[in-house]
Image (cartoon, rainbow, N blue to C red; front, side):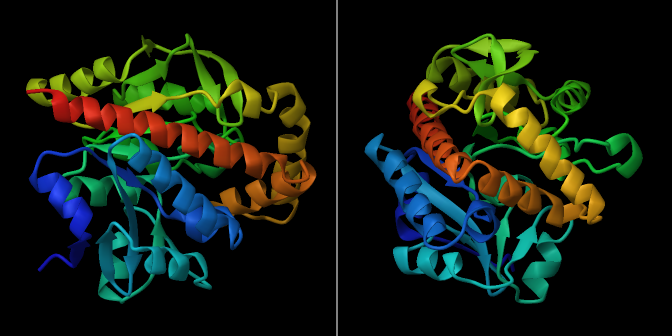
Length: 303
């Protein structure tokens, strides 16, 4: 039997054809310190509700997939020490072993699809790490996008990554990369990565119809919608570049790799920017939640 529980409000929306937006939980367990992680989770859910959709934060709690968390469950998760960071490779084992963990983009996509949720809003996806030609460190998020039919709204791939290689890999995998409202793919904290998007769409309705058309065509996988951070919250790419380079050098010197790498780099950047990167991160995930809700509502309106 599948160890999966759907919160009552989420279940009702799914049953009645309402709009639901999935949210990941590694931003809670690994992305921010307490209480900023709990407060951000609440604010992001509120953005979705304000648009008229239902949020479904996804996590694994004591070996059970939770689709939608109560306020108490959110607070408890935000304070868990040693929570697992769960992706496709270890999701099943975590359920068998009764673990508690945050779901990455890949694991959240899997769980959302199991529950029948078609739209997922996050901060930034994982991708090809710098130096991957030596380390082969490539996030499972990319292959998941090629396999699981969920539309993922993000602010681009995390700027700590090798962005050209990340988007080249997505092209090879046949994943549609859609820039929302501009020609260029954003770079997480910055609005312009310098990479032109292969596709541009300017309305939630277009994105919703493209998702549904992929299903009609029988195409595997989802869509990646890149939504630029609001202008007022942006950190310029040229400001971040030396900060990121320094963080990468520190990680190399300390031989920090695999799942520990991204949290380490984000923590280093947070310190170097004196908290500005965290403020920008919160702003962009809230912005993505709003767009995700609009896309989910547009899907619900389609016949």
